[in-house]
Image (cartoon, rainbow, N blue to C red; front, side):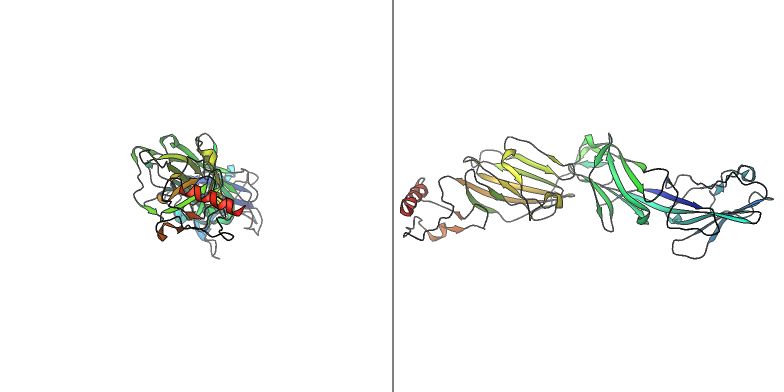
Length: 401
C-alpha cells in the first residue's frame, strides 16, 4: 500500500566557542520542516571590527569540511553559496554580530554544519548537526473508515533524541511502540470520521536543550464516503467443544499478533443473528461493555494482550452455548477462529470410568470424539435421546458412591 510521507528537518545545534569542539553534546535544538526556510543560528554580539565568517558542511563520518559560504569585511559575500536559497540573514553582520545562515533544506542536507568565525587572531566555531525526522502515514489520505491508521516517525541519526511521542486531537496521549528499523509507531484501529484532525508528533532531544520537545502537526483526513472491507480473512479450523455451565472455558483466538480483537456470538437457535459481545482495542486501551461482557476476561500467561497475543476465559451460562467467533485484526488483515460450544450441567469433569463397568450409550463409535485439551473440556458427546446423557451420569455417580 502506498505511504504518504511528511518529512521534517531536525536541526540539532551545539556551540563550543573554542579552537576545539566536541560533537558529543549540544546546547540547543531547532526544528524545521523540509522544504521550508530554516535558520542555523550563529550569533556573537561581543565581536566588532574586522570579521570573517565561513559556513562549512561535512557528513557525520567524514573528516573533510566542504565550504558552503564565505563572507568578509571588504565583501559581504566573498564566496558563492552552494545553494541558491542559502544566504546570511543579516548582510550587516560586521556590526550586529549575527552570522546566522538561512536556506531551504532537503533530505540530502543531513550532516554537520560549522559556523567558523575569525576575529583578529582568534577563531571561534559553532557546530550544528542537521538530522532528518520522517513521518509516514499509512494508509495515505483520505484514509478509509474502519482501516488501521498507522503513524510512524523516525529520526536519523536516532542517537540525537531520547524518544518520540504522539498525541491525538484534543491533546490526548497515544500509545506508541518502538520498532527496530522502523521507528516509533502509533496506531488507531477501525478509524472513524471522528478521528479526523491534527495529530502531534513530539521529538524529545537528548542532552541539554532550550526546549524539552519539538512538536509537529500531522493532519489526518478520514474518507467520509469510503469504508474498508476485510475480504482477505484467514480462517482457522472449526473447533467443537463442550463445557459445564458456570465454569471457566478457554476460548481460543487466532494465534497471531493483533491490534484489535472482537468476539461474536450466535445462540444455538440458528434463526438468531450473530451479535458482537466483546471487543478490545490494545492501542486505545478500550473495552466494549455489553450484557455478556462480564462473562469474558483476558487470559493470562502464556497469553498477553499487551504483547499482541489474545485469548479469553469465558464463564458461560446454561443458555450461552452456540457459535463463538473470535476475530483478530492486524493492520488491515483479519484472522478468524470459530468455536461451536455446548454448555452442559451435572457433568463430573473427570468422566473417569475406572471403578465400574461403563456401558456404551452411543449407537456408533464415531459418536465419541476426543476434543482438544482445554481447561474444562474433555469430550464432545452425541447422545441418542434428549435425557440419555444425564441418566447415564446419574448411574455413574451412584456407581462411584
